[in-house]
Amino acid sequence: MAMDDMTGKKPAPPALDPSRDALFLDFDGCLVDIAPRPDAVIVPQNLPRLLEQLSEALNGALAVVSGRSLHELERFLDGFDGLMVGSHGSEARGMEPPMAETPQYLGAVKEDLAGFAQDHDLIFEDKSHGAAIHFRSNPAKQGKVEAFTEELTARYDGFTIQPAKMAVEIRPEGFSKDGALAILSDLVQFGGRNPVYAGDDTTDEPALAWAEAHGGFGIKVGDGESVARYHLDEPMDVRAWLAAAVAR
Image (cartoon, rainbow, N blue to C red):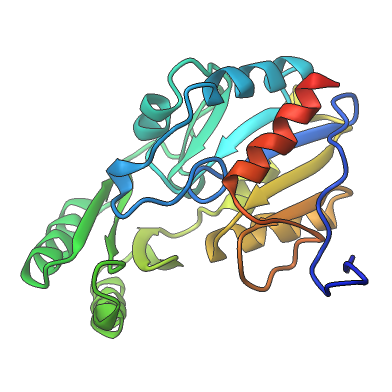
């Protein structure tokens, strides 16, 4: 893997090539800074317009790929009309929705998670096809959260655990960000392009690996080991890298 000879840190990514590359971007921790609560993220005013300009430069070969619900992405990125994939690939805008039916037991899973979060003074995040418990405000509860979510996935068929930064999510089986990239890459506007994926979390590692394995590259944002070839320190750096592509 590429490494900076002076510091041992992976280098910054090369300039995006709008004529050859396809771009896939995580949202939280990549385009915007992670907030204490999922509903408290601050979206830079120019971000939707920047994504719109990038999508035009790439002839539509750009997609936001997130674990967030699609309706939240649309609200936060109002003004960007391009492709969006939410809930780890189980819902999408601009392509045929991957999931046709609401997962069985979804209501029961959400109800149990919400009750646990309330009982333990933790943050519950409702999602279209799943839910998460955030323990950033009380890291000592991590073990209890993990044990409870394991119990739930054993109790209800069709769900799996998705670890995340200071959170644990339960989502339907069979969906993932790398799976979303595979589906998106079959769309005509992505044909023949090199996939570039940027993300910050363990949920992004399969997608980063997918981009690396399919002729493109991954960009790890923030701290932590990663399969990605390149690295950027924080979302502000990601946005600057994206803006440079528009300015070329």
